[in-house]
Image (cartoon, rainbow, N blue to C red; front, top):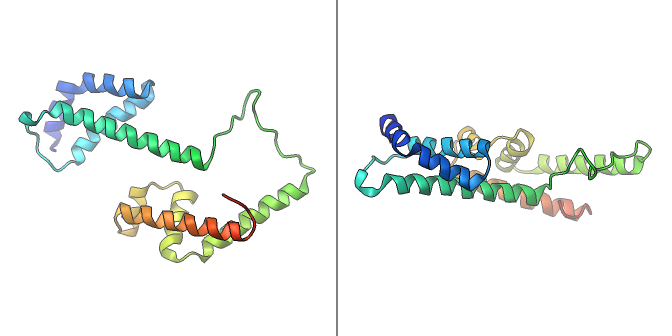
Length: 175
């Protein structure tokens, strides 16, 4: 869409879409982010605005789809690494400085994982390093690798599978 068309949509449906975003997220900051992502997505679309095809429904659909995708991402992140509370009653105890066995085990596992990453073929090593070492998103990696986002997703999945298999073979259990 052209910027003028998106500006008209913001003027016409903006408050309603914002309320919908706030209803979905329940938080002001997340609602504002979702609202902005919805209209940014409109700018990325290559279609032209047709008033006969209910642009309001298109906006609601975009906002809902973006929200669902973000929820799925958050669910996957939680499945991989559970957040821990650093303050309060449930704060984890810091490792005892006199526990050299645990420190040595953690260092050995980290070294084994880094060595396993180094053994990956470059087409798998680069995306996994950028994604987990530097927090790059899929689009940034795809742009840098000059590959479709789907290919990057596939490479990350394959790399994680290979790393998991190698770490389990070395006796480190599931990652």
